[in-house]
Image (cartoon, rainbow, N blue to C red; front, side, top):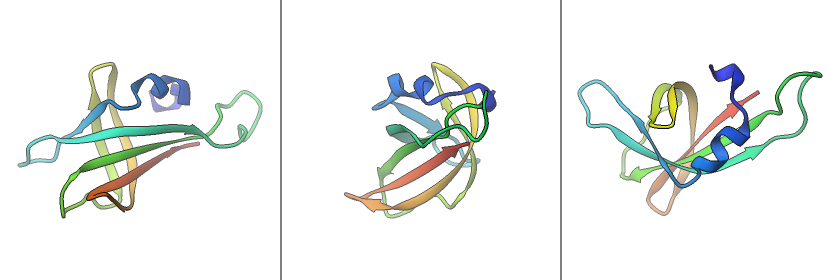
Length: 99
């Protein structure tokens, strides 16, 4: 399913929460802050690359770079590789890139 997604699929979801579940922990809400297209497709017929920027909850703890399952009620569960970008206002920023 990841291969069929486009930036436009996420644009209406900006400001909404995606939930990440880790064994033994309560679900963690990540707020989708921005969905941004990144340049041109690598080849004709391919989608334009895009970035999703998420904000984690206010916390002194953060997720490590890695693949996590995120759930949203308007999409199937997504296995996304996210990277922590650094804190902002007490919340960690995370990015997922789609090529």
